Length: 424
Ligand code: AMP
Ligand code: GLY
Image (cartoon, rainbow, N blue to C red):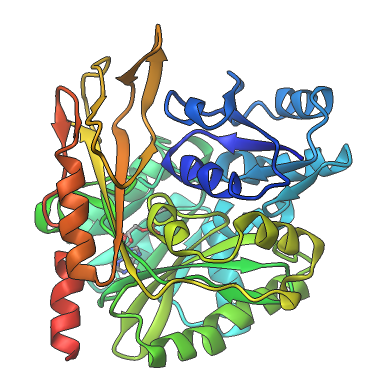
């Protein structure tokens, strides 16, 4: 089968490496892919938002199955456009992808169906939002409605800061149309857990839990990034929490989407906070998380391509999806300065005795030489019997991949380890 993957980050590299294990997968194209993905797939320079070109490419190349794994093309309706040409896809259609594409939609959905989340108000008008802020408890969270590269969430410590955030989103349009509407919500506290789940619209199969590290600097300091590292499983996600999350959040969400005439097929990402009252939804994403995928998929024992096809064909209840009981740690090697200004174009050297998984995100091939081209350059993942040793192994791997300007956090997994200690 000829497969098309729409995306070009570390997450897509992890997906591609995993689907290659299926014998029926004979050829993989990545649009646009990247310099590292080029070792595992044929990369073609078509951007993820160029829906017409993606569809033309898929038709011309007789693609059998497409995997759309990035938020923008999903929200823009890439799956609908491919389906219209008879190409089966992994990923939600436009109607279902709105669960990530609009925070106002997702908050209203949760309110309507009683799914636990932070209290909130949604605004289409700046003056009402500013007036409401005078009545809010501090800290307060201001969120742009639409996609904003993970930067559309401001945790304001003062009313002034919150008002500035509203003005920059609604008046100065720093996130373009994504900030035309805003959500103002209650600040929740507690550890965070990412749970990715396969769903065919009827059955929901949660994958092993994970913990992202979103801030740029050690001990959760510095700016928010796309994610600087992950561990799986997440020790906060105890069997008791998992049971509640499934009953109070996962199943009600899948059913709510059906009731709204928007059945969700693909991977639904639940960003949860474990509060004193129990798990609550911080955000939904309509896709695999990045870099959560880089620790979750290495632990998947069942064939990924088979599971993906079952989500498309509505047969997820017929298969048994199994995960290893090992642990995994992924450390992102970034360009120093990310997520602000940074230099790229440096050769990436990988030692010949590198013995883990490497997922390439921001790199290009320059005359056959792999060079840095982005903020997050590669993720290295180690799998081992327990969290401690997986973290240790992952950090050893980071020394075996080198480029000028290399930057990493040095505390990936530390918080998870201390939570694990406290649970004993
Ligand atoms: P999001 O892009 O919605 O995942 O938000 C980014 C980060 O902001 C989350 O991972 C949380 O750490 C934090 N955050 C978002 N909403 C809230 C909230 N209501 N209370 C506390 N922290 C939040
Ligand atoms: N790691 C967070 C995300 O994929 O949105």
